[in-house]
Length: 201
Picture 1: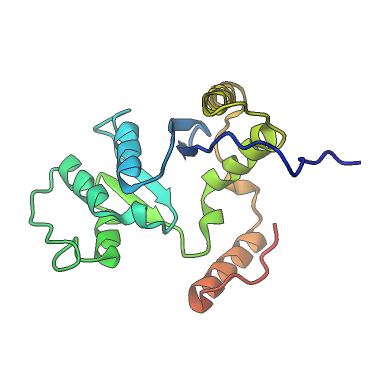
Picture 2: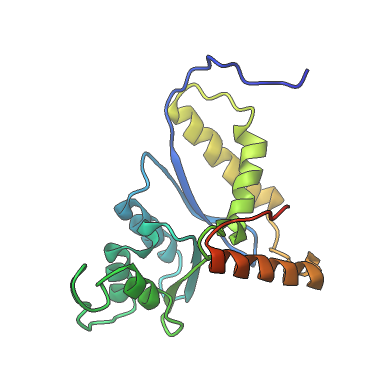
């Protein structure tokens, strides 16, 4: 019989892993493991990542989560790129008015730090999601964690191991042209209908 988890396993707590997959190397950058994933947590994670090379251009690919378009993230980006213009007021005016205006600012191609967003219901287009699947298979699926500290330690050790021995540049060339066209059509369908219908693989 295939191994199964018992129904009465003891849950010792949860953690949130936030990380960045560097496509040119396949390595994970600045992983953070913490109790929550609030707006402040995400800004702290982005700040930690940018501090790896503060003057470098950074492009982050994110899904449509509200914390990825927050007021504090926009203020951090504006400060980091030296933008001193009036940003307005959240919910009322200017760039800070709503998520649409904040996303437009955060995505601006002229910014040294910018964010690109997968279409709604398409977070699976983000390559870090593939890595999370690898993590689930290698560490979490049959993992046994006696405490939060134990979970953190095992995640950190695996990330170190992965970066040293398994990471490789992200290769899009393995996708056939026909597959790419099918993928583009599926994304268009999702953007138009707002629903996910039958994409396999």
